[in-house]
Image (cartoon, rainbow over all chains, first blue to last red; front, side):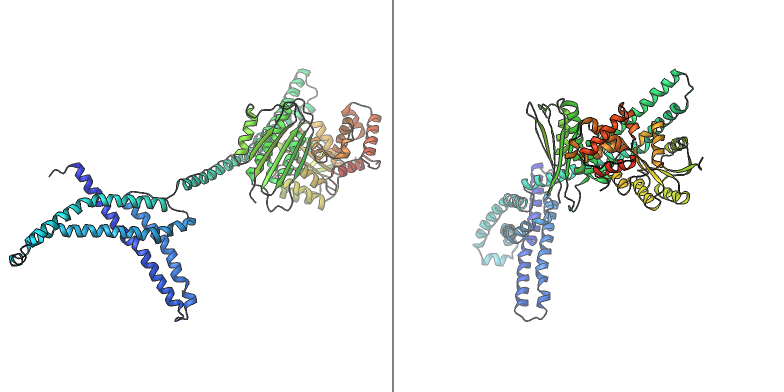
Length: 408
Length: 219
């Protein structure tokens, strides 16, 4: 037999809708029943007939709360298995909405579902009346002569009602979906909030991973290349000191190699310090910054005001950013602010904010949108949700202010 | 000639340790023991009671400040052993810890200074003789910390002289470094001591003490 595809689809859809609705009836009507049961239990306990009341009292309420989550889960299963709609799992804090669904909206839907199922049954019964009349014994038919006409009307009405069932069922399923999604589902703002949370988490992970990687490279360079270079420079120094009877050309070569090795050490040290100064982990921001200030090619006045009674230091990633900001700023000042004769670095901790201010007395005119160094600084500050501000009017002075959040 | 002075070397990089042994021997010391970490170092000092310990700051197992802590306990338990610390980076706090109680027979140099063999040998001898050898970078860091008002009264040249004093150099050494006469250096020093309200001191060592005290290390 050849069933037209449209009809087949309609039948499949109808079966799905009816199943979905049928499953909804117990799930929607059970919560109010449970609720009333719990109420009667409570009433029974409260009228003082039981000595165990104070101990048993919480039980029905607890059961209600647990049952609420259970019902929500069951509804999620119903939507997923029977309707193909995935309601995202609600966070624990959304209890109110789950309860609104289970104890208020749900029963109403349950009643609608029940009515629809009843309509199906009644319509089926009515449509089949003619068959039953026809199947009845002929004596009965003789005794009720006018009944066949009534039965025919009933059958027509039943058939008409049955044709309306698919539309009604589809409508009810759509309504359920709307309500389910609105109450149990995740709203747009929730979705965005969740997304922001996820992104914040993954970004923090990325920042930490980058930090850990810098630390690893620093350690590798320290244990490897740096020791080798010092050893090389030392041996060349020994050669220079001991091989005094070499021809002057050879001595010059050794001398040049010695200088090169020392320069290489210096360069590598600067590179490694830029990656991640070991001292930052060991002694903290104050010590690391004083090292920076001392190595800067211009006089730096450093003030670090970190209250000693703080429960904990800022997160390593935040300290690393603060260090990087000062390091880059001082490099920038030395490189670009030609007229600068001095720099001031101030680090303060105000509650949950680590504030770093770097000022110089140069001629100003620095533009963060041009230099890639300044842009990199702003990006790195942004990576830990800090704010970066810069004021550099032509004629100076230049001031850079960075605020980094460090939750207490 | 008195019996040969002895040294103990603690450095975890084997390559560098070999070089260090050579230089220390060139300086006229006998290397009594070599150590690869802080515990070995303490054991070696206990056993040999050397005149000098050359100590790397960053050593196993933690690769942080094991050397500093070992150096501190050496100075406490065996005050006759001079200690020269070597570090990839100079960190003022380590210097401050080391110099906190007593500034005689102490040195703190950047590791790369060993490449300048002659100067390094001089520093080794100075420290072993009870003097001081501070890396110019240590002094620079301490000056940053103390960039407070009295220092601003110094002229640039006086600051240079003060920095060299803090490194542990003699008047002659400062004069050679700055290419001026020794009497000029003496005059600068008198000015510095006057401007900083420090009493006149007769010995090099007391002078360093005074400078370090002023830098906030001896507080």
